[in-house]
Length: 367
Ligand SMILES: [Zn+2]
Ligand SMILES: [Zn+2]
Image (tube, rainbow, N blue to C red; front, side, top):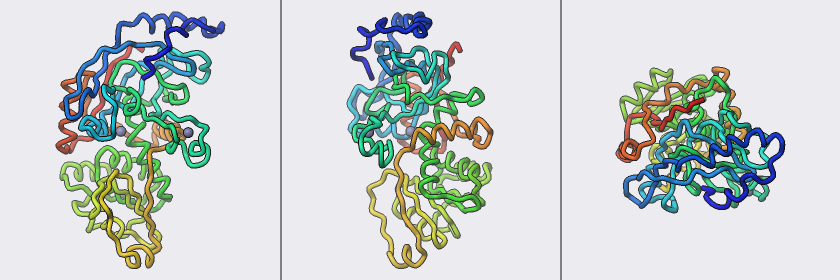
């Protein structure tokens, strides 16, 4: 991203405050080309690349990346889904340290630990002002429409840099930017209340976050449905009831479908108590069949969907992690280097289906 016209602006318009940051900016300018791992063609392995590491433009900050989660979406993009322009550096679950700030940035300082809100929005269109930033008419996703976090550095608008409390590890903060935030938004939009029973249909990265969040938000009972025995065992170790078949569910207030399988969603719907909500999160185009009277009307059930999340929810999540209400240390199952072979192997396992939770690309930074 942003490999355009930033260089000519460097050095222009420094305020006295920014003068103190000049050495840092110079450091950024004189960096060797940065390493990245990119999608270069559909259905082909990701490849190592050497890209220019440019200073931030006006209103932007440069983040040196400490952690980037490998999301199943990245495997989909590698397979050619999502109309991703190539070459593209994927990675939308990113956290690191601010190394430089551009002209006009005052909300973020060099040295700040930040996580990256992956939605770039205009903040002015009708969707941004009335419906929700995730529906921005010119919105772009970092790691899909713009280059993302499978790299050493990333330039982002200052608003997209979300401060990470000192006691929250950057790799945990990175994970929160996608799966945890989506699970949080799903529980919010489903109006989950303390004392309710939550069923999580499918137990991958989203499900793990959903379980920890449901507990943190006061769920009386959390039920997990997954066909993989190892995942069920893990869910039980974290305090959930676990089932192989959604047809075994009973007395659920909120069922969240992460599977995208119509039969599972329908079973979740039928397990709902009166007034229960089925929240559809999975990106599926498979039609869901239902009996309007029996499945909806007679029990005043509802079916809702949700998309992405809000920046404000990221701030809340990081606060929950900082105060200990939300514990995601168990969500990371593996760490790899910024290495094309290692990353491709992880994407291969995601394509095949895996019992592992999240893998994170980690780099240790000097500070
Ligand atoms: Zn993701
Ligand atoms: Zn907008």
